[in-house]
Structure formats: C-alpha cells, structure tokens
Image (tube, rainbow, N blue to C red; front, side, top):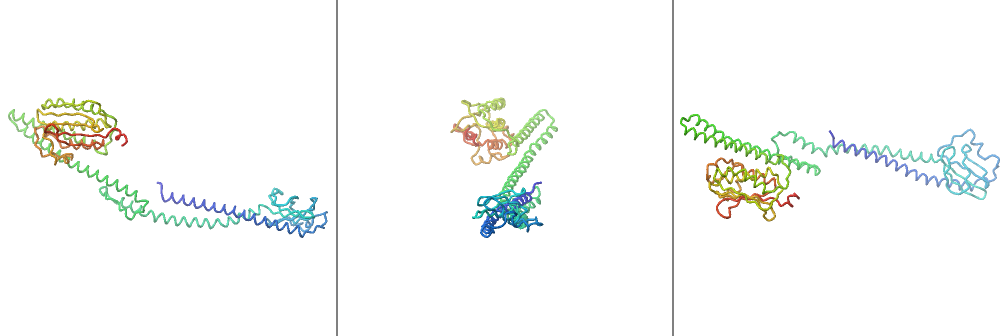
Amino acid sequence: MRSIRRTLLLWVMAALLLGALVVSAAAYFTTLEEINETLDGDLRHVAVSLARYQNVNAPHGQPRGLEAAEGNNDLDGSEIATSTWDTKGNLVYTSTPQVRIPFINRNGLTRVNVNEEGWIVYAIQHRDGFAQAAQRIESRRTIAREAAARTLPPMLLLAMGIGALLIYGLRYGLRPLDLAAQDVAGRSAKSLKPIESDYLPTEIAPMVGAINGLMARLNESLTAQRRFLSDAAHELRSPITALRLQLQVLERSADAAAIEAAKNELRQGVARAQRLVEQLLQFARTEPEAVTAPLVPTDLNQVVREVVGAQNLRAEIWKLDLGASVSEPVVALSEASQLTILLNNLVENAMRYTPSGGVVDVGAEMRDGHPVLFVRDTGPGIAKDDRERVFDRFYRGEQLAPSQRAIVGSGLGLAIVKAIADHHGAVVELLDRIDGPGLEVRVAFPAMGEAEKA
C-alpha cells in the first residue's frame, strides 16, 4: 500500500541529497575559478621576478639547475616550474629539468601539454630573452576537489538532520489524520455521526468535510430505506390481513350469494395487494441510487397516446370519458419508460377518484417555453391544506372516495410522480380545474436548452 509519509520522505531526502551534490559541485567550480585567478596571479609574479633577477650570463651549454635536479625526478603537484630562455629560444635556466616546458615567445598565459599532462604557462619577455613560470592544471583541480569534498560531509549531515526533523514533522502533522482514521475504524455500521474536525489541519479538513457529507447522505439514505421498509410492511400487513379474513369468510359461507360476495371481496383484496406491490417496485426504481437510463429527447404526445390507449378499456368499464389532447410536437429530455410510469400513475389516480360519468383529459403542451404534461379530472379534487402532504409515501387525503375503486389506491402514486419529476428536473403543480370542479395536475419540464446545459 502506498504511504504518503514514505513518499514525501523519499522525495524530500532525494531533493536534499541532490542539493548537497549540487552545492558541492558549485563549491568545486567556484573554488577552481578562484584558485585559477589566484595562481594565475602567482605565476605572473614569479615570471616577472624571474625576469628581473635572472642571471643572463649563465652558460648555454647546459641549463642551470640541471645538476640540482638529478636524482629527484618527482615534482610536487603544486610546485611552480620556472625557466628562462634567450632571445633565440635557447634554454638558459630551468628549475625542473625532468619536465620539459616548451619555449613560448609571447606574453601572457598559455595552456600546453607536456608528457600528456596539461600545464598552464605564464611567459614574459625582457631585454635578454624570456622568463616562464608553469604549473600543472591537475594540481589546481586537486585543490578544488579537496575543498569541495570538505563541504560534502557537512551537507550530508545537514540532509540527515533535516530528514530526521521531517520524519518527526510528518508524524506529528499526520497524527490528526491517524486519530480521525481510528475514530472511523472504531465505529459500528450504525454510527454515522460526523467526524470531529475542529482539531484537524487546514489541509485535511476538506477531505474530512467531504467524508462527513458522504456519511450524512448515507445516513439520510439509510433512514429513508428504514422508513420505507417500515411503511411498506405496515401497508402490506393490512391487505394481507384482509385477504386472510376474506378467505375465512369464503370458507365459512354456505349459500351461493355469500360465496359470490366473499369472492368479490377477495378479488378486491388481491387487486389492492397487487397494486401495492407494483407501486412499491415502481417507487424502488425511482430512488436516487437506482440505475437509470440517460435522458433523451422524447415526444410527450407519443407518451400521452400510449398511456391513454392502455387505459381506455378500464375507462370504459368504469364509465369514464378518457381523452387525449395532442397537437404540435412537444419534446422534452426524459427517460421514456419512467415518463410512462409517471403519466400512468397520474391517469390512474384521476380515474380512481373521478365518479362514473366523469371526464379525464390527458395532454401535452408548451407553456412559456417549457414542455408540460397535464391531467385534468372532474373528481373531488385535493384540499389545499393536503396538497403538500399528498406527495408523501402512503399518505391519503381526508376526502371521501367517490367509488369503491379509489379504496384500492396505495398512497404511493403521487410519491412516485414526484420522485420521477425530481429526477427529470421537472416541477409538479396541483391546481383547481378552471372550467369546473376537479383537479388539474401539471408536470413542467425544463426547456430543451436548459436541460441540455444541465
């Protein structure tokens, strides 16, 4: 597993070691430059002094200094080799006979190779000839390397000291994160309270805040699931109990009329239980965690035609005038299958609460640039005080059911409508019917331009 502490430490230590090497290299080149300047000046002074005080009457047969050098061919690395020459280029004197520095007939510094070694020579002309002072280039580099090497151990010690401080600092700085991790690890699956963030560093606080937000959403989701399961169990218990009682009545009935009545009661109980189970499944599919298809342009008129066509037979049985109002294309970004569930619930809800001989109109239109689905009925409507609560799960208003078919309702229809509308970014409105008693439900979807941006 990757460790932030170890990664930071490795990178910082690598940077410190690289810095130590860079400082040593800089010390080497800086020292070498200063040594060159200093020793170049020394060579000049030696050459000038030699030119002033040389014995220009030395014999030319054998250079002076040769005898003294015999038997000692080792030349100190930092030693300066001197020599004098006459105007014709004949060697007059040399301090190092074992190193043959070539004759140079121009003033100033010159680099030459002698026995595959680099030398730097300062030559100066005087009235009787030339004087030269020379030194190995490698000797200067050696001095610079020694100076740079003396700076490397302190730099390495400094790097190790900084590394030790860094280890301590990382442990101390990341300790709040360890405490937060221990806090989370010590909790049970039911403990979703926020992590305490007052003691956390600024850099860690956003991550802990995001975790707290996630736990809050998870807590809300789990609470909603528990409430949903509790409500579902409560709602399922009633029709199952009723089915058991109706079955007992059927078993005890003796005459044909009582048996037929018991059968009718049993059919209605089964229908109610089936309706409740279907709507529970529909509601589960509208939960935010459910996997949904992408929203695509959908013609709302086509959805209206399909839903009205599917409900026509039931409308005839219940003696309702169910009609579709469609004209120009009305397009909204939606998931067609969910939109069908939404409209089916609205139409079924309207049909269940509209008395026989009533009217239910379903249609789509454009209002202020927004695609709108609407369902209008001539039923009892919904009291204004109940219009907010009817979107709650399993809530039923206090209005009297105009027919037995409304009792089969589960109280989930409008909750499903609201959940699907929220998923589409749509707004659901409950209004009084304009041209008489009844209810009008409008579902206004975002305009196409707004929906695409979202």
